[in-house]
Image 1 (tube, rainbow, N blue to C red):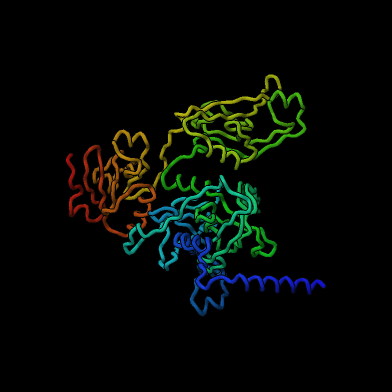
Image 2 (cartoon, rainbow, N blue to C red):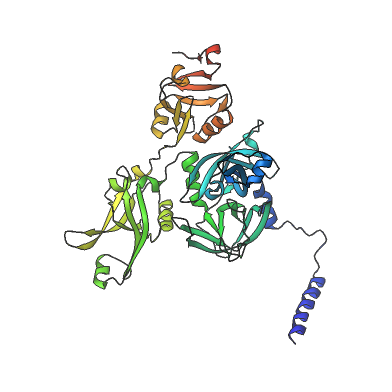
Amino acid sequence: MIRHFLLVLCISGGFLMGVQSEPLNHDRHTPIVDVVAKVTPSVVAIRTDVRKTVSVNPLDAMLFGFRGMGDRVFQEQVYSSAGSGIVVDDRGTVVTNAHVVSEANRLTCTTSDGEVHDLILIGVDSDFDIAILQMDPGGGQSPSTYHEIDWGTTNDLMIGETVVVIGSSLSFENSVTTGIVSAVERTINVKGREKPYFGMIQTDAAINRGNSGGPLVNIRGQLIGVTTLIASEGGGSDGIGFAIPVERVRQVYNEYVHGIVSLEERLGIEYVSQKSFENIDQSQAKRLQLPKNRVEGLIAASLDQNGLGYTYGLRKGDLLIEIDGISVPNLFQFQRALEEHEMGKPLQLTFLRYDTRNSQVDRESIQVPPDRIGKVERIEKADSWFGIEVGGITNDIADRLGVSIDGGVVVEKVASGSPAAEAGLVPSDLIISTNQIPVQTIGDFRRLRHSLQNEPSVLFRIRRGNQMGDVMLGEQAGKEGKKRGWGL
């Protein structure tokens, strides 16, 4: 009877389809097809090469000439692995997971149209498991050919909404899977990782090895997360995958590429753990204005004395419970509350503090003025090149010189006796371009330093006050004159 019933269902479905047959020219371009067409050019396959020295069979050493030490013979071998990445701006900046690029000696990526580029590591945030890289164009590729992804948001995610994953699943590049948002704000503990992942997006879209670092996008083709890990009994996809929310990704991107210090960092508070206390006396709960006989929050383990938190009264050991009246029981809620803070208004931090004088817990609040919140500094530094150390342009420097904060990078240090010192460069000079290629950010400077590292000489365009000039550093400096165009 059951088989007959199922057979009827199948026949009924087929009959109905026959009666309501679709026209031959039915458009098969579903929303998912459109999303894939839009997003795929922004996805790259990342290859990491790691060199390791390993022991080899002594017989192999005799046959192939491997070098050894005593009775032990060693050979350097290169191990490769695959991951995914996302192009997030028109300069070729790539976002991926930190664990994808860890220990790599060489990084390359392949774009959707088959072009291969070296990758320069700009920065890593191990807490968020996010790495920022820069494509080295090589071959004179124009930055306009980079296809940047559209940024989205997780603030309005709906459980059950359609999502798409694209990446190098099991090393098959540009593999596409679909699913739904299964849950949000998951906290995931991973063995061997010091801190848990907070606020993760859960999806049932198939995620496998090689997908790490790739995009999780909504039906509009907007980035909402970076696929990071799966929960699996056998190591394959069991329909439980997790992605880092896009807000975390954008924060790390802004810090490393634009040097923008987040509000969280400017508070200068470090948290070791979240704490909860239950069975609080009802009268005490009322006195502390707690909604129930339980309190959850974040312990301030240490504070930067130059940070806003310490400056306005927060101290070590305080239990932070609210930001702007919003409960912050964990790190994810804390970060989200800071992201949602309305600019132009004071930031209110509410915390519980143990008063040793009367042996009781007090509820206290501090307010950070809006003019301190809105002050964004660029603090990112780049390593020395020809004896030059540079930093991003701060708002103060931009105002003083009448330039935009993307108007170059500022020379912060010049090593004594270096080529830059001999050429006359001094701190506060602005580097506008290198070999006639514009330098707008620290990321640009690092990318050019990497791509030009084998060049014997490099031409820098420098701005000093209202004057502009060219400075040649390297082997050709003495032949062509160290300075050109200076009105000094």
